[in-house]
Length: 154
Image 1 (cartoon, rainbow, N blue to C red):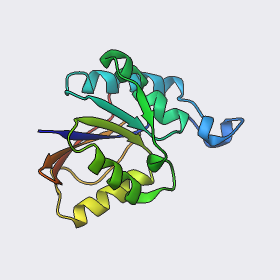
Image 2: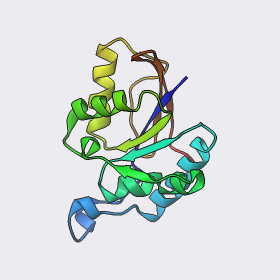
Image 3: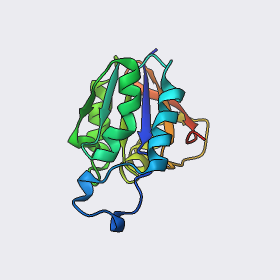
Image 4: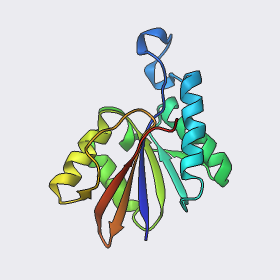
C-alpha cells in the first residue's frame, strides 16, 4: 500500500539572520542533524520518489535521504510557501501510486491536513507540524484514508 510522507523542513534558523532571499536560506547545524535523523526514520519506508518545495531548506531536508536511497530530490513549486493546500493535493494525487516523501512549509502542511480532515481522513494523532516532523499518510484507493504523526528526530 502506497504512503505519502509529508515532512516539514528542518531548522533553518531565523529569517532575519539570513542575508539574501529567503528561498536560499539553508538549514542550520541543528537542521542538518534533523535531516540526518529524517533519513534514519524513513530509510526503510520503501520510498521511491522525493519531492520538495524549491526553497533550499526543503531540498536540503530530504538530501540525506535521497543520497541514502540513490534518488534525486525533485523541486516542485506547488509545495512552496504561500501555495496553500490545492497544489499539494494535486501533487499528492499524482504520487498516489508511489511511496513518496514530500517536504514543505509550516503554512502549507496545516492547510493540507485541514483539507484532508474535512475530507474524512482518520488521524491517530492531534494536528501538529513541528519542524522536521513527518505525517505518514496511507492511501486507500483514490483517497488518503489515515495518518499518523512522527515527531522530529531526537
